[in-house]
Image 1 (cartoon, rainbow, N blue to C red):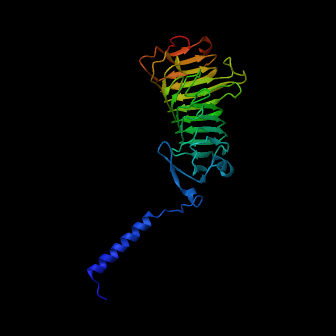
Image 2: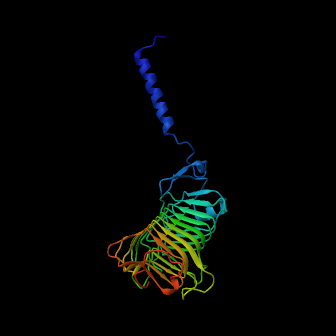
Image 3: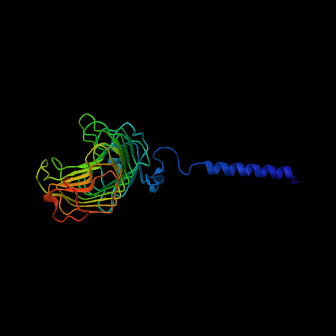
Length: 310
């Protein structure tokens, strides 16, 4: 058979079209539940999580998830609260990965859990509430929490990490005390070994952190709250006298934070908040003094000379 240039060009064109069609074809079936567990998902800090389990709802995730799983959601959760009730183990927590997906707030009631990369706009306050041990909340965004006391994040438990989250636009109207983050110990247990690092509290009406132990006068008087590390956070509080307030919280380490609004003072230590260490924070020039402290909190204090009462 005589091969002509026209025949060669036609063969090449067909080959190129076939190659393009193969590249455009998905690497797994698109039907929900078919081979999708090997998919990847980009989290809030730009890292990639491998989805080992895909679920349509939190209830399905609670039924199917096992220790070590990374759960990704196929369903639209933007109009419902993400309620996490299934945890993993100490060595193998369960990760719930949002990849920027919208939810109407988050409630965590489990141990050994990581919640990463969800976005909540005007959720019922608190925007995120976590109760448990060995829980990590990271790379989440809470914008304009409404109702309740207006808080962005509330936490209760031991060995907690709250990192790289953004809370913006908390609202003190109608008698609220709308903090970026809060913990207390009245009908809830005291908290221990809490790391709050590299979060952004922006346009916050009340405090960036209000931490109350069981012996603060309003608590239940049982146990202690302590061993908090507050590091590398950006804090913009608009209406409170101080940005961080500790009442009955022992051994708080407060370093490398940026206090970006002109509060009366940056940090308050009261009601036996002993053993605090304060160092390396950056203050807005309108802040009168960095630390306010009462006599009961003086033992073990290390930091700049306090400027007055909390």
